[in-house]
Length: 226
Image (cartoon, rainbow, N blue to C red; front, side):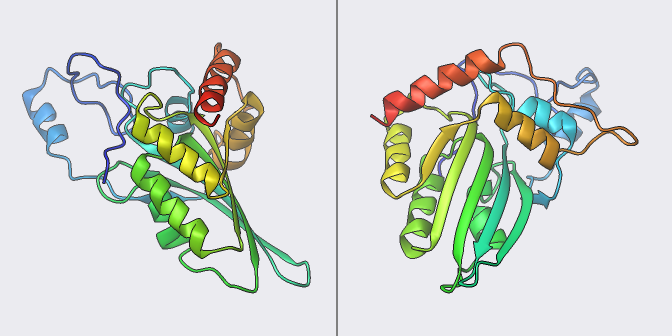
């Protein structure tokens, strides 16, 4: 499976902490050895992700060095013939050690589709799918004609690569709707998928270049999907 690490071309950097933040204690050889030998991460699933993960991993920077995870926040609505809607939501996190978050969604969150229901699924992703995950999504959409999927991505993963561009076009052709997250979408994720500080809920504070970076990625996606 294709690696999904998003790192700008630069000299090798020292190991990063598990949440992508810089480490302070890299001078200690024992500490460094302990970090290097950490076991590979597996899929993490929950209802709300820590605020510091959101602030780092979802930030729509142009060069996303150090952001070697995918966070996928999902909303699933299943509607029956009588009009009743069953809804569920949560998030998935991967470290790219095994299955990616996109594949984990189909393996654990929605492993089977009831032909008597219509599914409307929305993903809010820290970055868009890699080629292998796009192929998995295309296959799922081909098998489940009662599934509608909307993907909103904070960043475009390795968008310059022809393989990735082709994969994004294949997603669109399979019926998947692709969008770049607007500032309002980041605020929605903050309100509905992020753990709030104990005793006090804080409002979403957009970073300085959030609108500029949204427009940058929106233009790139439009060019790819022409």
